[in-house]
Length: 272
Image (cartoon, rainbow, N blue to C red; front, side, top):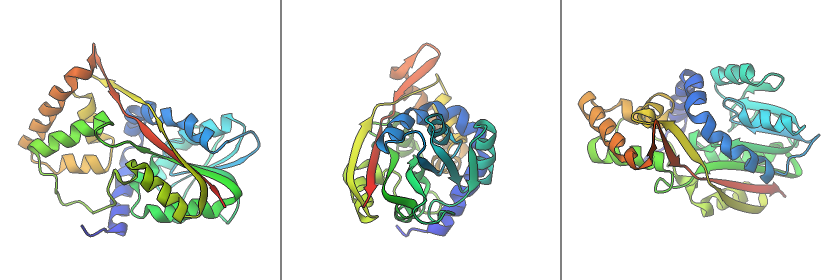
């Protein structure tokens, strides 16, 4: 596998420009479940300066502001920045790349990235950048999904593609999606970037979606990498994948909804 960081970045950026509203509607209630553990991991308190990196719809930034922090959110997608600015009144957002933050050195007491590291071509750079913008003793935390065996929504779609589809479609190569699903990899990444007192903890989460095609539609219309994988399939193959996913969801269905376990890891460290 030959990584193509710039092509991958362009692919991700183009995708996020198209899906702010869809992501908010389908993933918002899920990814928001990691916010308080993230802010607890960086020990955020009133009056502290805080940077929300890869801020997306601005959920973390808004929660930090409610704690009384002085907040800035940064995202590389202009569409996401606009969406966040409309959703989170009174919170400042600006365009900026997690791998080259538009901020000076040692400006913040704390920073966090909620599932953003999964969408970067060079995540190691983002960890170094997070360390750079923190003051000495400042804390940083990021969230990632657990392995697909545990994050049932991802497991179901990947298994359906494995059974019926072509998993090696022509998409720009990025880092493995589940690279940081290994707690030891999280620790290594933080230590190499210059963090100390590193810890990784698991957070249970549940994704509630409409029964039937709720998961299929969320993955096809409100993600980037997984959506690219699905949309590259032939129509007849895509239909087989959809039917396979529907069948796999039956055991998680409760009336008109499905409830899927989707645990996350929270990795945190302190700037030396």
